[in-house]
Image (cartoon, rainbow, N blue to C red; front, side, top):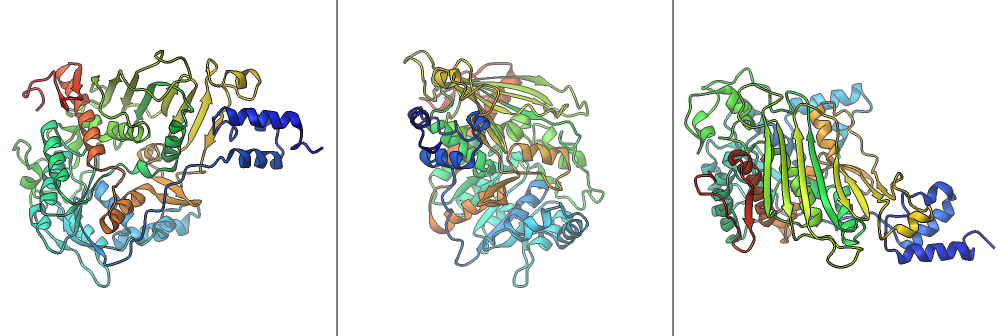
Length: 524
């Protein structure tokens, strides 16, 4: 009798099938003692284990979609690159770097991107140097982008089908609202809005339109997050009572001390347009390039980095807006004149939320989402979803550890099939950060925000997120981070900011769909 046909082993397999923990076999202790490949394959076949993969997005054929880029700073340039456009000087530099270092994959990644069948037909950028770079990037043999001096002019143009908005936060809502009213499709970066009032206004405008609206949370395309959704659906973790997410950065660039261009001046920057609805002050280069440090233009750690972590968990758990939010922190690591905190803690309470329980009904209910941030240390503390039966660590990779006190896996733990030191499920697509040398870039890579994999090929997550938006424009359908998800992200982030500013525990009433314990003056 072969080992596979052994009755004792068959009973073990049936027992594992009866305990519907789909990831228990993949990385678990059982393979430490049973290394025979044929046995492994037989178990996987019998359990039908596979990493969750997204459905194909659909075709990008037809006439090119005509894109207008509003804002060509750090993120705007990255999004243009994800669409397939780079200035010639940058493309040359990537090629030379690849020739000098065979491990530098940036050039190959870029040229192997799928052609998304778009044209950049318009650029609206307030700094002349960046505007020229954007025009260079979008210029092809049969197309040269037009520079629009105002976003109002761009969204009214008949030569623009859709806009990508990558400006400071205080301009997101005014630009998005104007674009939607003009019938343009919108891809806008997070935070979707700058304050609570305009979050409602943008929501209503989008809901009453026929445009496709996408918020730039590209981790919704990251393979590990997609797989995590399947783990939650199968109640692998049991009741999740605590989610921990973190920001850990320790460089000037990571703390928004961005480079101030030597050609910046009142003659090369449209300062009045930059200010927009912000208070009127004289020209200030630092405010223009390092706008995230001031409340007038940015949303601080809440809108910049908490939103990534919040939405990444929301796309897995669908927990929505919290009932209560409390925040604290201060300026402890970069005393350079900034207003926004650089150390920040946020507690979001969900007293009625549940992911399902393996214990008796009524024992478990409620969850806390805990965000902890410092811009003065870059030790990776990771993201954890902590359940009664197991804990999942999540980022570019994914691991699940069974809990020693688990109800669901008690028998498997006793048999030594599982232990709390060895991952019972592990997903690692062998993702590296090849040639990505900055600490900030590595931070985003660890979060799963730079690359993911499709069919074994490394792909820019932003490229996939933009493609999803474009496919919905062409063929219909709902993008993964539309106005509903954007509303939940923005309101939750604003609740954290308001708690920090007012010192109050901010309360959301789901039935009234509003914050109920702050005055209008406090919510400005």
